[in-house]
Image 1: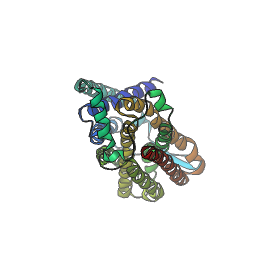
Image 2 (image 1 turned 90 degrees about the vertical axis):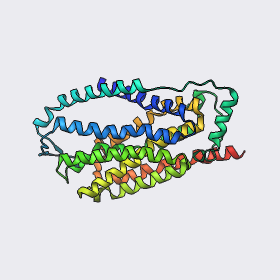
Image 3 (image 1 turned 180 degrees about the vertical axis):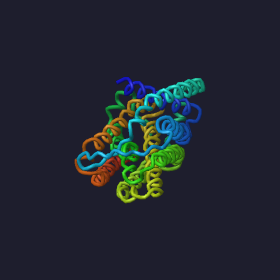
Image 4 (image 1 turned 180 degrees about the horizontal axis):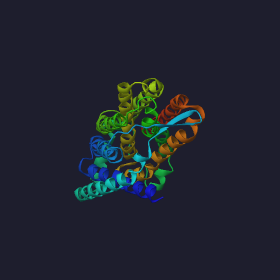
Length: 335
């Protein structure tokens, strides 16, 4: 229970505080700031993913035990690998503590004295920003009002569904890939490359948000994700194409975590938006829950290839909800 709750709480702080501090220094470049800040998550996964495998499976022992579970086959490592798991957690705990304390000491928020004129000026800058599109300055006056609004609900549904496939892939890419490519170190290499792609993607998509509208970028993310769903079963059978596929999925997934905080701050304003983003973060947990349910129940019931096809539908639905948000905001701005 503690392993589930405490890391989630700390991750939430590590996700929001750097964003808020960065936005205070560069309010007109929120996309770039968000991309650079969240890029650390991808590179961190690469680094500590390598450390984890070095600690738990330094000799690259291959999985030998195959177990049939419903319509899926799973492979398991020997007891020698699993016995080193506590040692791996000890290594990671020490590393996380050192890195976390260093990051906390480096955080700084720009303190300025705002007047009503400066606040109005900031809203006008955002309204004219390319990524703002036709969204007018925020008409919301409280966090409660923001959370009850249709834009928040629609975007929350969109994020919960559209992030699910990428999170699903992070769960199954290694155990499922080992059925076809029985090389633990190569699978770790795939995970490391995908983490780098995920980090670079946050910078890439965040920067694009400074020049293009949310819906255009989100449509692109959904389209690429659907394509990956369709070709997954074919590419998993070949080592290097599989590496390219997983990197692509994680590269696109990084955009999901980058564009939503930016558009929320645009719709609800910077001050309310910061609080709204904190509540919005739970939608990623819903996406993770959906991915877990698909892994534990749906895939064994209908097979992985069918699950990939189901994700085509699940991934397309968010585009409709996100489109409703942009249409309603566009009509409001014209009025």
